[in-house]
Image 1 (tube, helix red, strand yellow):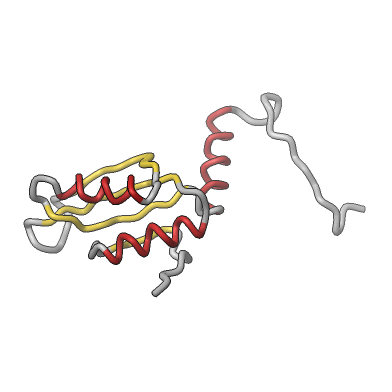
Image 2 (tube, rainbow, N blue to C red):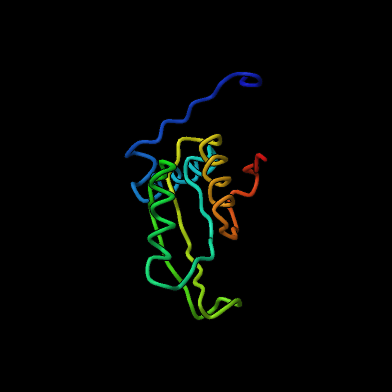
Length: 119
């Protein structure tokens, strides 16, 4: 009876709690490339992280979460790994941001990985 038809499941107080609703929304944002996660290696000198966040601001990315890690980075001791979760406007915006970061020389690990690099 339902094959080939659009099905809607209402998510409301009767069948889902707010914590689960938040997780569902975040997964949806991630699937739409409106919430992206990446790791970038930056200089551990004063201003290194500030330069990264300035680039994110110029590109219109809203930082949802940011964390830097020194101890488990297996590169130079003058570098730090910055883990970022950013809110974007979609896949095209994600592609523009990823390209801007690469053009600025930041080594990246990007999630979701299907965001293309345009040369």
